[in-house]
Image 1 (cartoon, rainbow, N blue to C red):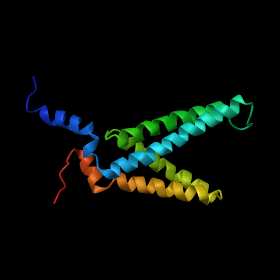
Image 2 (cartoon, rainbow, N blue to C red):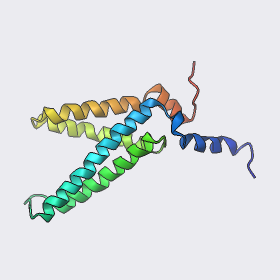
Image 3 (cartoon, one colour):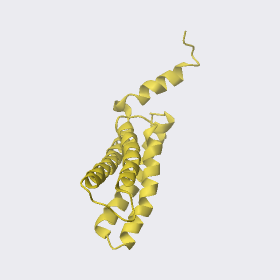
Image 4 (tube, helix red, strand yellow):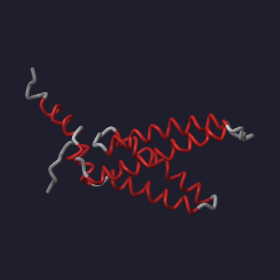
Length: 148
């Protein structure tokens, strides 16, 4: 038997599963994070194919690097899909991924690859802005009505 005390949590779970009340910023951030996760998984697959084809590196393990990209990319992919479908738990994964991608973008920039670093940094910053927008924070708190 449900009590009034249990109702807000129950309502919050329904809201959490209802993508129609998810702010657009969260959906876009989820889509961008999903793409980032997909890229990580694709890199993992490419590294496995290269290793199976006999390509060997003296400084890294193709299979080990593929496992790392697969695990991290898969986690980011799951977080992105969660956000895209209106699940609050994906926000933390997306936020950490963006924060970790900023130093990667800096490294790419200082390595002479601005073609990759600038779009990566802009995407990471844009997602962070969307994740911390007022509508997103209200959604995270479960307050769907805009404040004064």
